[in-house]
Amino acid sequence: MANVTVYNMEGNEVGTMELNDAVFGVEINEHLVHLAVVRQLANKRQGTQKAKTRSEVSGGGRKPWRQKGTGHARQGSIRAPQWTGGGVVFAPVPRDYEVKMNKKERRAALKSALTSKVQDNKLVVVDSLALAEVRTKEMQRVLTNLKAEKALVITASDDKNVVLSARNIADVQTATVNTMNVYDVMKHNTVVVTKDAVASIEEVYA
Image (cartoon, rainbow, N blue to C red; front, side, top):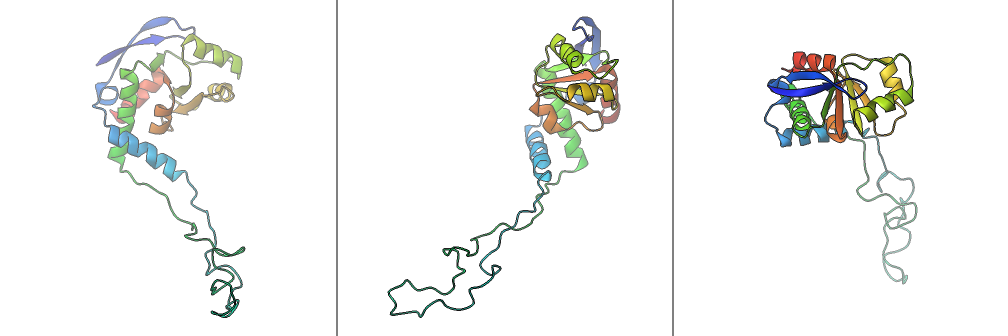
């Protein structure tokens, strides 16, 4: 098991904590991490784009002029793609962008993402994040003390003060153990996680 330093909100070391290798020390599977990121971004797409092909635009039932002898290029319809008001060639149509991964793959991808942060020394464990009130300046001070830039803050449960205090800080995002995902873990430089959240993660994923 890997040992990590535990910090308080002032950025001072207050002890160490053992991380479960079943979650934070697995063999990194880059393919599954990539697939999980692709899946999340693809599944966010609405897939509602639509344009009309030449068979769907109105008009153009009659041949605009006879085939030969006019001096014009031959035309069959005024709604062909080269005409103003014509249909779109290979027009986009509504579709489902869903990418599927089974539960085992999703869990393995998340473990790989967390392990990579531990190996890069980008996982910061804090003993607690207890903010007395919603205050952005206080949250920014805590992150500065922890030397956490572009950070994902993971708490064990939904803490309104932490969420609202971090909401207006650029490149900072909050999540709970239930809502964290591979894309957010990989997107942020540093993952700040409370001791309670670490225990919950190990309980769920170990």
